[in-house]
Image (cartoon, rainbow over all chains, first blue to last red):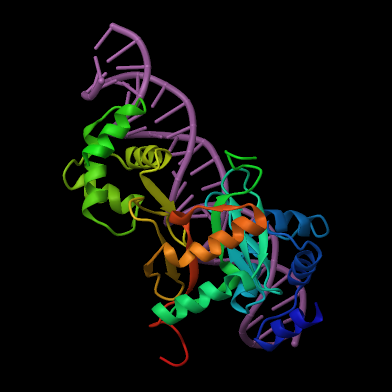
Length: 139
Length: 139
DNA sequence: TTCGATGCAAATAGTTTGCATTCTA
DNA sequence: TAGAATGCAAACTATTTGCATCGAA
């Protein structure tokens, strides 16, 4: 938390109540949240904070590499702390997002780098498909 | 092409000029195109075809499994024929979409299925990152 | 006291929906 | 000729931008 605010200052940004609350919210809820959901949570404590501000601050945090944004098919983008590297399994059936350790992707990332010179950003990694519950055949 | 139209009919759909042209366009340009780009190409031959119709027809083709939609971070979704299974590397620098054979993902897909019971839809698979040209360090 | 951050409104991009009309089967 | 498909307009969701004001450093 302090590290977040320190990094903000280092890069010429200013620490405002809106940013502090957003950072706290992100730290508190370790799940994936849309900008609107985050705004609601922030507004519970500071009603004046506008959705626009949340977008702007998320953008800044993303630039600093503290937050990662993920687009999962339909619906709004979701944001989460960049802390522990992990990938996502996005179920097309129920929309659930399952986090999986980045290590699962290590082999793939290495192969892609070797064959295509492409560096995979692990935090944004999302695989679409169907989770166990939504899978049609065999339970 | 005939197969596409036949499948349409089989599933209770009707074959209209708009659908025929959309299918032709998709077959002709084997790259990833947004709904708007596809509409433009169709409109070059049939100006009356509305963007809305393209969206509706893409949706139908997606339901039939003939077309796959991919969301890649920013910008519009892109559509492509579901013919050969492959994944995508989406460069955050230049926006380029690199196709890679699905076989690269086989190991990963198997691991995810084993550990999480999650079935990966290979055609929608997109990895974000940076391509060789946009990579900052070591050319 | 300066310049970045904010609130607000309005614009924008992408996509979906309602409804009367058209056309395929 | 019945009902799916279309054109058009308009709604809608997610996000961005312009601008005057406010506040952190």
